[in-house]
Length: 166
Image 1 (cartoon, helix red, strand yellow):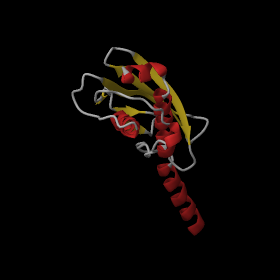
Image 2 (tube, one colour; image 1 turned 90 degrees about the horizontal axis):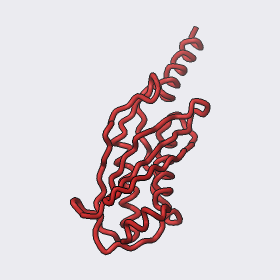
Image 3 (cartoon, helix red, strand yellow; image 1 turned 90 degrees about the vertical axis):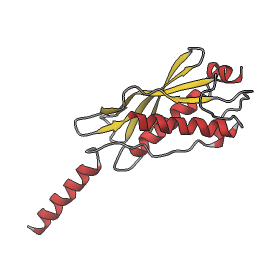
Image 4 (spheres, helix red, strand yellow; image 1 turned 60 degrees about the vertical axis):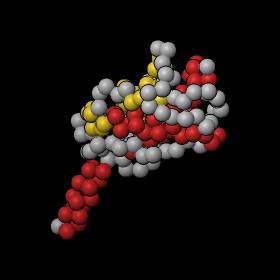
């Protein structure tokens, strides 16, 4: 009887850790090898343009996309700082940042897909979809990797680099 109680307690704990609850992406900093170099003569603003905040990913899993977008903004700021670009509020040159879509892979318990959307001050818009996978008992790490990979894709986009450098 004691082993049944132990097993039941283990299974309840496992289920609570593996998908019943919110996803909070783990911070995954950019590597220096990921960053492109650019120059801007003026400071740049980063705007959290997230329209939908709380979403339900599965029946048992929800998340706050504004938190995901803020993490993307932190990574973009890290890139700007590496290039000695000042980030300020209210600049004429800006990037609107949002994450309109996330999903978890039903076939792989630890993979997350994310779409990062960027809009420039000139109205140019582009989305970057990335997939992050990581071991563990929650999607937090894979979500952090997916955000990181989407930002890296954005940093290598010639249209974004041209806008930031003009």
